Length: 261
Image 1 (cartoon, one colour):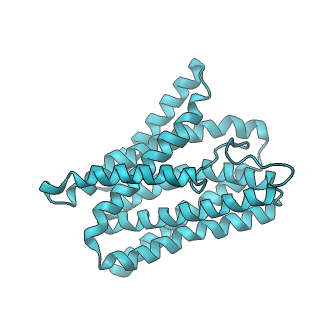
Image 2 (cartoon, rainbow, N blue to C red):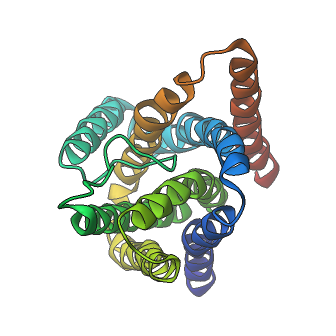
């Protein structure tokens, strides 16, 4: 049972990492016009999956994992998680780009092209490592929750990787180097997941708090990164498309969670 669970964790960590990098690399091969048309739709869908995974999957399991007299500590953990991710973003270690030109990571043509690319890779590796910990924590709580969490990670990783890829290219990296470095960065998801699996075996009491931090991560990405991107398109047709795709993301997570149970 333990070996089987570890296999699930490794497989789904790879799903959220390597496959999203591959999808992003293929996505960059299409024309810029088509890419700019499709990317907002992926962002809308990812918004729905992240919010649904956090509010319908992770938080209920986190609350169920603590004593009824201690349920207030879970909202506190979510709050501290949100503030922590805000701090990481202020340190430019968490911000993710979902377009070819990112207002935070636009490289300075004169001096800072390489440092910008390096910062992207460091931030991406840190994020992927944490994603791996969150995926492992979800699987150790409930295998069905692990699947749902991994789906949400994969959904938001694809548009994120497209944006990060684009920034690396703008920073002077060749397509080959950008792809290799992104693959190496994505492997930190598996490293984080495997290390968390070993560590959390003896610290089961921490699982509800891991889930709470996972929920705060998903909520923060959706609210601070994705939704502001969606607001850049204010026309009525775009708003309707966004609502439909957000709802589709929510329904996917809800249906997956319900079916697996």
